[in-house]
Every structure is written in structure tokens, then in C-alpha cells.
Image 1: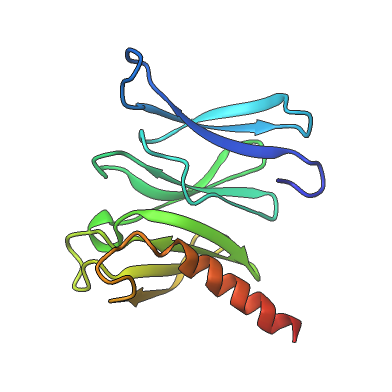
Image 2: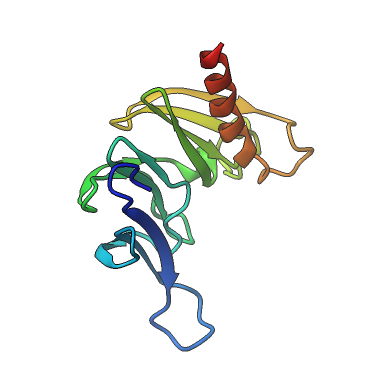
Amino acid sequence: IDPNTGNFYVTWRTTTGPMGSEPDVSSLGKFNASGTMLASTTLLGDRSGGAGVYYNGAIYLQERSQDYSILQYTKFDSNLGRVFSRTLSPSNIGNITNGVAYNGNIYVACDGAGSGAADIGAMKVIKFDAGLNELVRSSYSNVASGSHHNNDALAVSEAEFLERIRRF
């Protein structure tokens, strides 16, 4: 939600096939505070829209395909124009599952399900600047007893922890 205008952003997936088909189109929409759609755009990949972050007038989202031939984190301007995309290796990070903004940076959590990394299955937190330049990447092995999809709280907790420290 844009705190100045009340505009909000929503992602959704739809299918062009018969009822019950897997989604094959992902979209991002901008709505005003009353719920009227102001703009929309089609995202790359059929599993896009996760790990959304709104920061300083920009929207950051994962764009990916089911087969991971597309995996990128993309920055959009407030009118849904594509600003920049950072291509990522699914074999090294798995899937981007969550994102938060803190102190001018974007943090994303990755489930570590990739097959090509030396630390396979290790959850990752990647810190980007607002321009999506990678600043640091941390891996966490044996955090979730073999379950690699529990890292959502990791990125959120890190940002919340940093915010609490800032307040002291």
C-alpha cells in the first residue's frame, strides 16, 4: 500500500485453458484506495508475483516460470513500468519466497531447493540495494530439519530485528 495515496498493488494468476487448468498467466495490478483498477501488466512466467515488496514508490516482485526457465526479481515503478530485473539461478537459490524492505535495502528469502549449489537445501537471505544490486548473500543450513520452505520468517525476522535495534 502506498502510504501517501492509498493505492495498493495486487498480483494474480489466471488460466487461458479450460476450468481447472493450471495458471499460465501472471499479472500485477494497481488499484486506488476505493478498489478501482488504475493499471495492470502481465508478468513474465506463469508462477510470478511472489515475494512482493513496496518501497519508496517502487514495487519489487519475483517473476518465474513453473520449470524455472525464468527466475528473476524485478523492480517496477509506481505505474507498473518495468525498471530493472535481476536474473537469479534457481539451481543456486531455489525459489524466492518472501521479501522485505529495510533501511534502503531489499531482503529476499530463498527456499534453497536448487540442485546446483554446494549448500543444497540451505535457505538463503539475499540483500539487494534499491537498484537490485546484490550486496550480500547468507546461507543457513540445517535450520528447518530438512524442510526448506520455512525461511519466510527468516527474512521478516531479520528486518524486524534490525528495526527493533534501531529504536534503542
